[in-house]
Length: 142
Image (cartoon, rainbow, N blue to C red):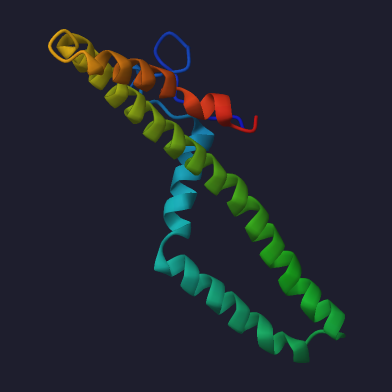
């Protein structure tokens, strides 16, 4: 699964929150706006109104097949476009959460390293934490 990670000022994929420039592409900004619209009650109301407007057209269209084709085509197009847009925002959200978790794990590992002289068990726990960071890359499907 390809991730849409933010990029740092150097052009490399950002791994820590401080590496993120915060600059989104035009498509990413559009996908974010579309996601915000689709998650509002107004979009749901629009969808309900679309169905309510479509339903009586059975009397205007020449056949039931044409009548069903109209709603099937409209809903398929809307669904197809929304899936692509929402997947974009979901992928970016997942990447942002992963960057935050990596930063937390890095800070915790540093603290565990500093305290391991007083608490010998922390060395083992720190090693396990270091092995677990990046686990999602090793266990992902693609």
